Length: 252
Image (cartoon, rainbow, N blue to C red):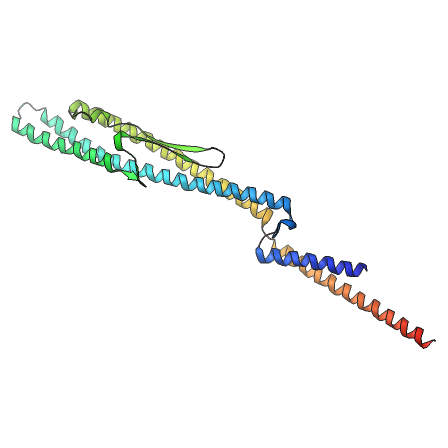
């Protein structure tokens, strides 16, 4: 009876091993390891959250890069406007000369406003009205990262595009670019943390849940040998019983 029980036990183990090897998972079903499966589900949920957070951060980084590129274009306009305003201060210039310079400065102002009005990422305007404040989730524990672009265009409103306004706007723009650059570094740092956390959790989940094919193959081979041995012993037992029965009938 014990041999039959052993065969049935091996058959159960073999079925589990085949399922494990075909699925690549140590727990192909909940019955194979409910506690381990619950742990794996929790780990996988955390991995998904970190990867989703990394995607969010990548979008924030892209938005920051777009904003910085736009501000670089604004900086070029302001540098040209500043040059023109200095040249206009030359007392030897005629009124018509100053009008020409002023017209070009006005075009610089229009160009800056066009950039501010049209710079966007995924339908989100980044510089309209002089700035924006964006927050993105980085994990499922309430973590977040912000992208704040200051209102550096205020000095250019109400047609105050004079020498003093240009200089102040240039300082504000340089400060805004510096802040965005620092935030971009912070976003990249957060992305690296998310990526490392996801990789570590994936490795842990792999150790917990992935099939160890070498070990599974070895167990299958051992079970086959035990099955063959149990079957041989069962046949020998049956043959011995048959031989004993034949001898008993012959002696009647």
